[in-house]
Amino acid sequence: MPITLADGELFGTLCAIDSSPSNVNNPMVLRTFKLFAELISDHLDAGESLKAAHVSLERERELAELREHRRSSFADRLSQPLPGFT
Image (cartoon, rainbow, N blue to C red; front, side, top):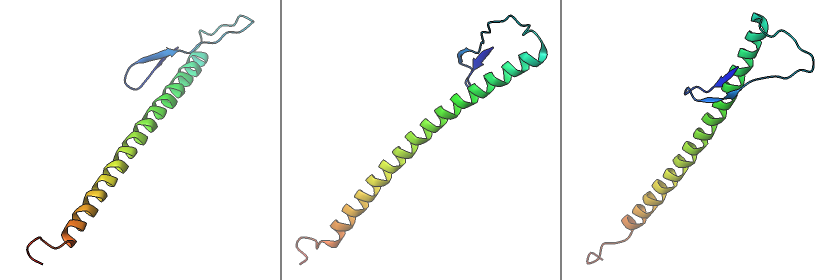
């Protein structure tokens, strides 16, 4: 059973091995394999989404730090008297 990610990329194939032969070509077994393949795909996609969210959050933190540094620097300059006006 193919494991396809949300973006359409084929991740791999879900398969099983058993020491005793059995008929897996029935709707219930095929549906079970399909559900497991979807579960694996959803889990992998969620992991990628979580990574992307962490990267985005870190980028926002860095931007907030830069904004705060600029604001602080600007406030410091405003509190200093202008040359020639003292």
